[in-house]
Image (cartoon, rainbow, N blue to C red; front, side, top):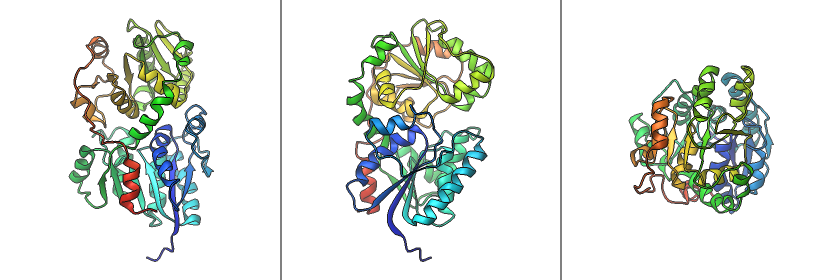
Length: 360
């Protein structure tokens, strides 16, 4: 099919993990003659989780913001598909780059693929093998509709091979690693975030809660917060907008409970500063699991499975689900002493992708 494509690459982002992954690609594209057009779907609309990232990293303002906001899976996906479809059909880019496993990623992939535009999926092949997680459904559909599958690890590549996907697969490493390394220096200059919340380096736990499994049941969420407040040491919990909304729905006022300090969402650099200085982290976030691994902070994952099993295999991550006994045990366990090999590749994943795809 003759497409008469333009020398444009479109990147579609919509949630803070996308911005972290896209940042190294933005840096690489700035060096090329190819125009880089950024669509922000608006899936994450809180300024601390969206606009502040662009400001702190001096990333260009997205060319378009679809301002989709929250909604059901169907509502988000449909609105993003309509918005992305119009833009890519007008621009006729030579490629559409999508990141991760969100509704924004799935919607952009479907919109582009159905019009035969080349789709590049960054963070392909990642699996947790639990189809009751919406993200797992997204991952499978995105990978099977994409033309180039950029894997962050050997395991991700093997996962695709097991599903019969072998064409266009490139194991180039993890884009987030470059962003982490760049942000690390800036984050260490932001000691004020610790003082403002009354904690000292190495003497608190950082926690994040946002997945549906943790937040969809109000009673379960309240029990999680109660448990975090009874760990016997300070816990800092930046409150995800979805979690705050869930609490508001049941009339549960977010406030300090025991040693639990619930705070507003923070920018990426402040979040990284909190992570780098934490004794341990308790999370249900995939991105935080990797960042904790790179930071050398033991991670306790409140899930029964993870997309980042490499971190579990080398002993820096432990899966505890929502089992209080397992969580208490993991909090008290010794700090790992094993090495942290580069299971997600060396720095430079975005550069390697640009070179592999022949963009100039």
